[in-house]
Image (cartoon, rainbow, N blue to C red; front, side, top):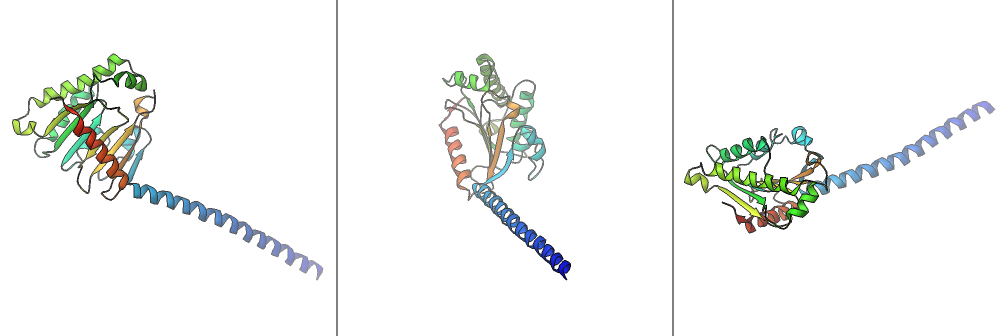
Length: 236
């Protein structure tokens, strides 16, 4: 009888301990899940639809509504217009394909309205940007002017109607990020905003994609960069 009572007490103690442990762990698990749900809800409300922790992520995760690993692939997702605010469009051999691709987007079957806004190579911000990018000032200016001149050269080949659909501009405001906006002013508009950390290789820049006509953050950023582009001067 003694051993039966002892065994029952031991089993009861084990069960109670297990229940207490599960209760504590369950509360922690619920708290974690609620925290994740709260974060997910805030991200969704902000309109953040994707995150790229480096440029390698573009090829892995930039895939809606279809895979768009390269810049031109992403631009082709637009249905009506493209607005870009950037340091430069590309450099080296890449610039040829980028400029030709942009030119093709104003022609049939795309017929998109495109505005490319690049930092003015003569702006007072160049010195600060050169330091931030960890790039010689002369190289930075060369990349900017090459982008502008390539775009101008290709635009000269367009018909008069097609030229009206491509705008090349320069701005002198402090460049905090590079931005690509697709279909600004439409409910299905989206934007990619890319940040380049101080003196870190461009490959390790990170980006967010936002969309959603009812997202206050998306609307704030889209309107802000649209105004920057509108305030910029015509290069050609």
